[in-house]
Amino acid sequence: MLRSITQLKGFAIRARDGEIGTLEQFYFDDESWAARYLVVNAGDWLGGRQVLVSPIALRQAEWESQRLDVALTKKQIQNSPLIDTHKPVSRQHEALYLGYYGYPYYWGGPFMWGLASYPAGLTVDRVAVTQGEALRARAGKESPDSHLRCTDEVTGYHIEASNGEIGHVKDFLVDDETWAIRYLEVNTRNWWPGKKVLVAPQWIDNVSWPDSKVYVNLTRETIQNGPEWNAGTAITREYENRLYDYYDRSPYWTPEAENLPSHSAGKG
Figure 1 (cartoon, rainbow, N blue to C red):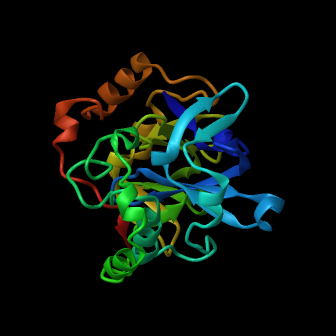
Figure 2 (tube, one colour):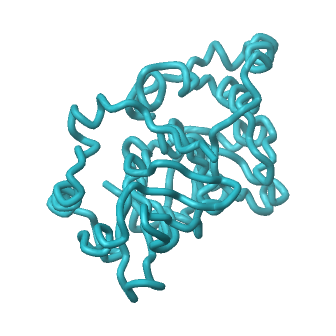
């Protein structure tokens, strides 16, 4: 099911032995548009420290009570590698983090999560957790470049159609199984009051990070006449079919879409 990232903010994150904090935002990578990490504010428990939790650790969601359970202990989280979420997270930091928990690198395989299409399909290598020196040596060989972006940072980016601006990024809709961002919610209030539309990451031509702009190869008129999105309502497959039919694109759940070349928005 697709979930609004804005609505997920504030969810309680509970470890095996108690709550660890609240969800603040996500880090996603700008190549596959998958949400790679939950940024959790641990509050007084860890002196206001922010920690990362991979979707690999998620085990159960209580949507009505707004809680996500993770297969980790508070001690594991407390001893996890320190990462400054106010600075870009490097690939070396990611490698240390994933190695600490025994998670495989998501950039080391053919699927969205490396060796699997879903984070729940990955297994944890407990042996790797004890091999600290080897992990640090391996992490040091990783490129310093990272493709991680904060959802809070990208919220508000201007959306540029082929013939002018159409609005700005208001929210993200993420698949709660694959943790792929399926749509950007675009607020077009400056042109069509009250109307919101969805844009799939696969339709993005380019993102200019320095200019805070997202470029799509669609005209303003095409988007204006597209299916409207009523924020806060559940997205049905019927609506998605209408959306993809209108834009004449292959839906993400079809083999045609799965075989398309991977799109990188890390340009500009």
